[in-house]
Length: 286
Length: 200
Image (cartoon, rainbow over all chains, first blue to last red; front, side, top):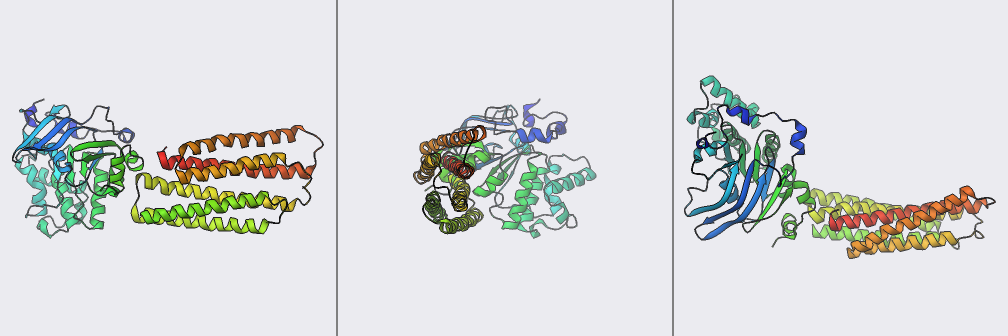
């Protein structure tokens, strides 16, 4: 496999993306810090100049699970997830040490193309950011520029499938040429998710995707997140403890740049091992 | 949420006090006519149990507690049920003593011994809750075996014995059965205390 294509890419991309798994295998997956993992973060340190932002993070993330990264503001959550698709690379004085592998490939290896990495590790941000073009063009943008569709028909098929997966197709199928900025906040966010899905990622990074949405829209996005983990590995940053408890398979608590505790979500939210974790999730951390 | 949790705790303490009084009054009913009083307390305990349930649900709906707060809310519902059962069995005991009019000449030794153990278990289970003492809770659970043992031995003797006074045997068996159930619920309360504190 050529590392320059990102990671783990073979001639037939779909064989990696759509491996059939029985449901009970999915359910049996645990936080699995001791098991072979999709993403392996080993002794990760991140610096912005002299500021030591992430301190010795060790974390394994299993395939097709939802991992929630939680912690107080400024603890390094966003920095952590942005290391997974190298979005921090262009930040001034950014420095990283340690190893991050995705499907066994070191993503900070010189052989890795960060652009292709971002195809496979998609990201959705807190504030919906659709392009000021039509709904169709928003979703088609990625496949077009990366030449992932060989014909107009194939492109339309990709757009429809992505919108369906994002739970938006029924709401926009008659408005595909309408400007995306006319959609509601919740629809815009689901459009952004569809746009990320259109380039067939394996991993989705969601940075507080519902924090700027009204409760009804937030619930729709949350339901989408639950559906997505059947096919994608999802990593979610959220301040909303209840949302984290609802959607996560695994919960990881960061504090002051350190990974304090990680484990299966029910265990973390019912009986965390660390006092600091308990204080944070019960809202008592000063 | 802390205000809600404190209110929940206070309700449980009220139930603890009332249930202890109920059980004490019921076993003293040999000499007093306490059935109506015990019944009144039993009804009050049921009302308090409903209040605990409503408050617990409100806390969950409003605040979505997690970790130790969640365990406390859940454990409180189990504990308040235990106290309700104390009141109910106390009433059942008082009814037996009222129904069997002439049992003052029966040998009450076994009932007294079992009552002493059961009342001690009630006190200890309440204390383990107020002091968050898992060791005390574990001791309550072990004491349940003593009560079970006394009850089983009595049944064995009844089955294999002869020439008993029917009123004495039946009344003693019923009262022992109710005391055994009270002891079981004391052990369940102790279990809930351990769960609240340790999560296990």
